[in-house]
Image 1: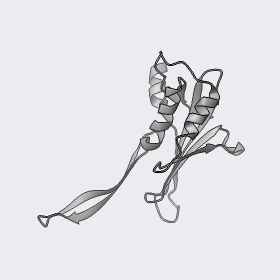
Image 2: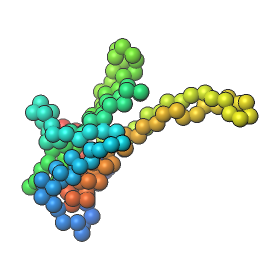
Image 3: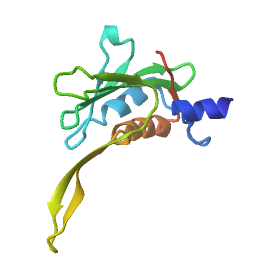
Length: 154
């Protein structure tokens, strides 16, 4: 059950030859992910968020807000994370949906364009994969020798 549960929650373990770094180095590595061209922002969590760090990403083009709350557990050398997602299905927020837990998803928008032959074709106009945010977080934790453990509640 352990491996299946790890797969369902997105839990990953570091390579066995990587020595765990101190918690301050893990925190610094996660905060260092901020920068130009990065579609998300990593920041210190607010007290109400019940976490140590939070990564946020807003994609207004498709009406999606992603948030990954992370709690550092130095005694176990693991970062517990909870992925949350809010999706607006309409412009008036009437069909807003909330989801939590590890669930990678690709958001796409399509357009119809005319090609050089004069044929009309559907082409992808916009694409965002949630792994663009979660994989750098996960890799920073694993490179520090810590476990990246998915949970359903922090």
